[in-house]
Amino acid sequence: MTRTKKDILTLLEEVKDPEIPVLSLVDLGVITGIEISDTGHVTVHMTPTFAGCPAMDYMQKDVERTLEKHGITSHTVNMTFDNPWDSNKISERGRQHLKEFGLAPPPMYNLVLDLDILEYATCPYCNSENTTMRTPFGPTLCRSMHYCNDCRQMFEQFKPL
Image (cartoon, rainbow, N blue to C red; front, side, top):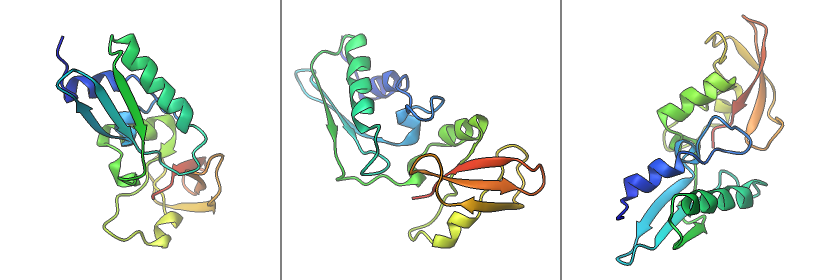
């Protein structure tokens, strides 16, 4: 059976971020490339969200397990920083899944990330922008803690990067 890049990406939608189990690695934007050789060897390129991400090995192994589960035994999963990840790579579907999970998606930004952007988050519960960042340090490196002044809920934001 001949597989296409689109087929492989569809299969990899099964692989979820271990810290945010509603978000696939494809929607998170860490799958940065798929190559299929003439012999059918599949190479998946991945870029983690942070260089020190503790889930890198787990994500890599989960991609390998998923490929093998679907009969793709000739594969390489390449973890690389050649194509740096940024939060703009999260798909619209991924942003919606973050919100449904109770995490404010990071705002989209242009070429330069202004540090002030970390201060502002839209509440994933009531969509209010009347929020306050409580601390830039959340339970993981990629999250910050915020408070909604309207619905009075604490929430996490996936940090823009």
